[in-house]
Image (tube, rainbow, N blue to C red; front, side, top):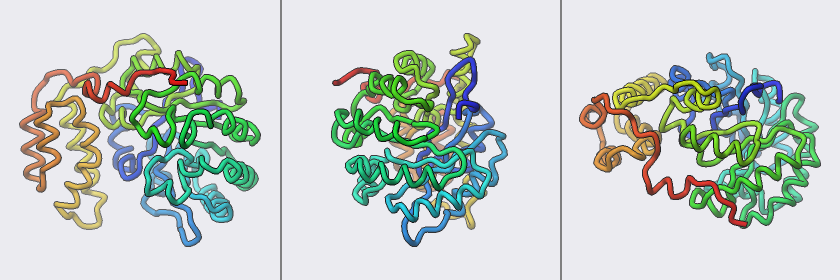
Length: 341
């Protein structure tokens, strides 16, 4: 995995966000800035699961030239092994195991972040998957389920197995997204593990990227919500590390981005259904609204038709004012970096 990391800066990675960072989003993002690699939305794994054909297209139709890791989520060792072997038959850069999803619908099934309550089971899963996966095998985790005090023991389990990379969201599952991240624990992981560590959590602009990297010395930064809100973010962060002028998008640039995404998603639909399309757009727009005028978010949440959608975009985004660099002040309450131990 170290061969994927640039020499002059940390790797920049698109975080997987279910039902948002799909193939159409990757296409639109790639026209503005590219991560060093992608990670797919997770493939659900259970005794009756089959590879999701739509998510699989993010691998088979990846025209960006950048590597893409396929992520799995589940807790059944036999089925995870089976799915890992199936995914390895496709042109993936590696297979990733999700140990970090904080959604209750996921963790209540002892998948994603729910597995962090059962370290012995994680130990067994990692050992089995390492044997089953012929190529790169990586893991995405949080610091623990209830408390960051759980992290040192988890770290020993990760160190025990020859994983090729570990992405760490700097919060616990219980924290969800409501606390600052804890860079000191990520730095501990960097100093403990022989594999590259990727830092995840609240990178929303070049300043937070530089700060997180400085405090953790991580080999890379994984970015989700920040890149959805600002698809130029990867190039802006690269410019910050290279000390070159970044691209500064305007509201009209944002309008064009949203419009392109809408068109890409509409083309992917088997048949265009206006209400369904608007509901899908809302999944992405809720991240983009942050930092724009409150009236914009109010209108977006209540829109029901493509005609309303177009009128809202024109009314709020059809001007050359520079796009706000940061999300709203309320969101920024939790974007600082602190050590709560």
